[in-house]
Length: 586
Figure 1 (cartoon, rainbow, N blue to C red):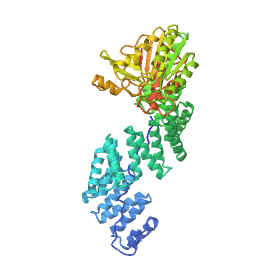
Figure 2: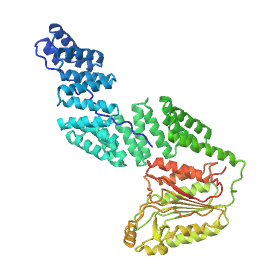
Figure 3: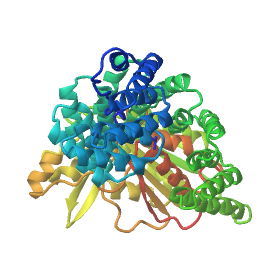
Figure 4: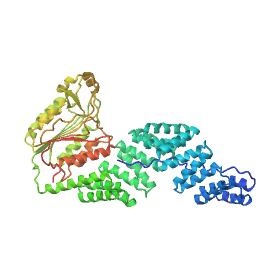
């Protein structure tokens, strides 16, 4: 999937940098009043007049820290502490400078000293929480943020930072509650909106995430983090063009940051634009050559293109960079197996091409159930793809039961004489209890199912479809049909149980058959936001791949659908094939 950029902690690392109020007039007043170089000159003069004034050292330290000169700041804070050992502010500020220099452990020690001197010091608890968070010590960070909020319950920074800790601990609901509180205290707060949007992506609520990022972008159209993460949310909805537009804007604003290229490459691959994806992965690798994920991503493109050797080289490089990289290790095994099978296929004859026939049905114009947008487009696209690889294709769209039954009977005669017979169905289907088991039924556009006992009369059972292709040497049935059950209420009423989602798997696949479902058993597939369903798009992009056995081809489809839907949909197959079948040719 697309990778969100790291969500930022609140950018108030130096909330404790407050100058002490001096007791002297003249230079000391200027030391307190002026900032930057002018403030440093005034404080230096004040120190020359009164070298025992701790306040002037603290104020000059603050100005040095503001200019990034933390070593000088630390020396001033040390002098202030020597003059006034009980000064909690000097300890706090020195801790901030240590943290800015990357010495987080010493920063934590300083914040602890400040708390010992002043037990109700909100800023010390807050800053120590930030330091613990930077070390990955979430429990101690959480304890400090809790104490900071107890001391000052109207600070949006504390709620935003604690929300990040809850998010990192996997407690998304409490994270959202903290971000909501921060936004109630400070409407439009950028960091709270960005962090809440990130959690909404994790909760698989991309619309809410997009709304949060939209608010940030309305304030600043060039906000790179909001644009990037909105692209991630668009990808979660399979709105790849909108995601690409956001990533392209990110790249224009930060052309040397590889993350924009990486995620745009993922979006291009999900669209089937392998060449643009490859170009983006090449750029990401050039910008960050030590990132193993980009080698894995580029390996996927080479695999898509059938270039097994280059894919293997990229997976090997990814594993060298990260020896425990499980995804790359799995991909390496799969591509080696596919490469070896392709080599073996040259010496081992597969099923002859022979007669190839296909019946493609796309049912979308349902009345009572509500119209599905994509099945007619799906049927046209699949028919075109199968025709291109030698199938004799019949396309039927928006068929009532009589038309579906007649088409299957006519197709049966062709299938009996075929080497390969395929039925591809896009539309509604349901699983209904029959004799103690669940059976799958394809739904014509005129199905009513007022009573589930009418299923045999109003729908077409999957078993019947299998019978109609039963004499072909190789039988493939593809069901892009695991959508929401439109007759859930009737099934629940008739069975007094909760109706099952999606479709049921075959108990025992028939020898010589392959049944493919657009998502896992008991799960629900989406119709998609584009002109084709996510499954159909992946299928038509992959089916013609040369040298790819049908089972491996479906595995490739599975990977594409999983990636395109953000992991919400995973195709599944019941495999009874007895030998290799190359739909796209060897």
